[in-house]
Length: 231
Ligand SMILES: Nc1ncnc2c1ncn2[C@@H]1O[C@H](COP(=O)(O)OP(=O)(O)OP(=O)(O)O)[C@@H](O)[C@H]1O
Ligand SMILES: [Mg+2]
Image 1 (cartoon, rainbow, N blue to C red):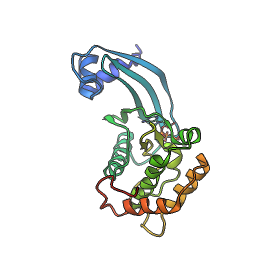
Image 2: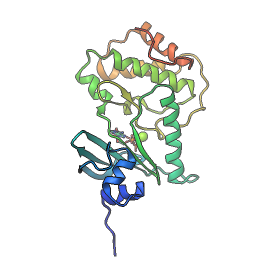
Image 3: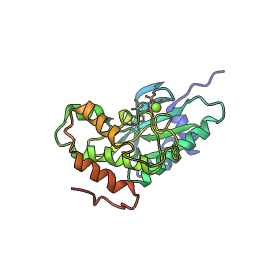
Image 4: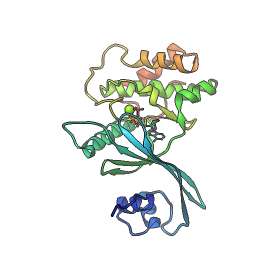
């Protein structure tokens, strides 16, 4: 007999809980174990891109509504299991997060599945729509270029996949588009020119080259511990 997939069963299985309320609480998706919570599917499983399938839902309680994404890893590899690939993505994510780059809140990672915060919209669409007041966002793109260079990432097309909630710029794709760390030596201007070109192409952003250089240089070394960068 075929057993149909349900979100409730999946969450209980991931959290090893025997009720949805307990599962959501263990995963950090509700504040209180006894909260009255409703789940609302936004869309069923569908292909996210070359390496993923995604499913979106909302967790609605009296206090908050959370937009959540299930991301199943479906990347092709002859040498690694899907679980190993997912672990590698989590490792890359941690490296960037340690450098101050925003990444979606991760509620669960395992069994080739990620449960994470569903973040706003594509940065490119945001910048096209609201090109003013974007310095805060463009600075984060230069910072990302620096942190990726610091760790020797050689991404294929990381900028186009960036998302935003209007405040922070989030990296959400840690797969082949980002690639592994430690493959490129830090040399010359690294990813800064690419970041500038990408920004100029998407949002008709007016880039101040001095500012871009300053933000990039500040974050390249790794000694920057907080937000006291160029202003
Ligand atoms: N945390 C997230 N919040 C919102 N959207 C997301 C999130 N993670 C991924 N997405 C979106 O889901 C889709 C697939 O995600 P992702 O880029 O991680 O997978 P992919 O299979 O590598 O896709 P692609 O082939 O487009 O690179 C993309 O449209 C991406 O913007
Ligand atoms: Mg990708």
